[in-house]
Length: 272
Image (cartoon, rainbow, N blue to C red; front, side, top):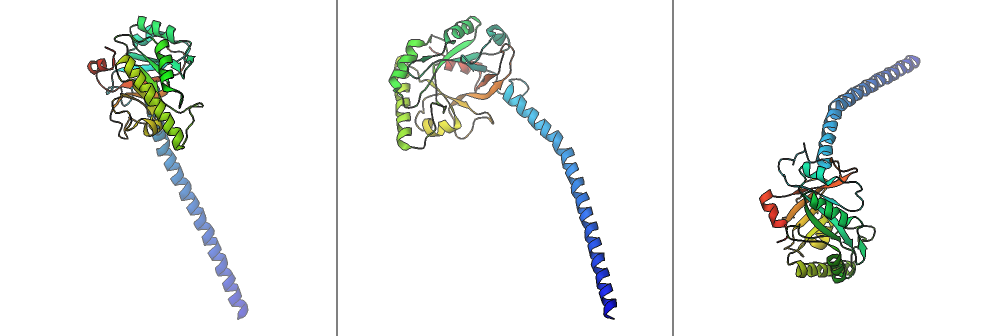
């Protein structure tokens, strides 16, 4: 009798194991089928999504905002090697900001050439200074004024405020205070000289640290490579949406910008 019970028990265990193996196989089969279905649905969606991002962040045309923002511009420095300015104008580029100076001594080697050729091609030209954090703001302004060409109907001059290998991010209150103090001195010196508040170029991070609540009268040129400007930046007028733009007339990738308003209002961004 004990032997029969042992055999029955062994048989039941084998049956349970066999059923478990069959169930495991079914679960694996269902999992594989579901994974294949997700791939079949997800891959086309992902391709469509990334194509959309590619259009948004690499070109002016055929993206979500191409009809909303019709005034288009670029910004350049000596890092942009070959530029056919006439082809840019033919391609409906309206304006260009170009780097002139940085700190108290650096000059962009291509600035004067770029300024002349862009003006000859009929583009509206603006000039910007790359602010070196904490360095004497008044001296930086004097260096910019000496070097730059800013005439009537040019774009209002701009100050580039962003972190870099020289402008190190810091949470130290004294460092932030000094950075902001010298930026205010730079801005005030340019306002005193040109009698207009300069445009402030920045990104979301630096806007929150150095710009917000400190420069209410300055037009903001905001860099956001992921989405249309929000986060309470009400006074933005230019949106830099790409560092990897591809347009005819430029040999390599270039920064792309939209002006926020109409061609009529664009006049408000020009020097008197």
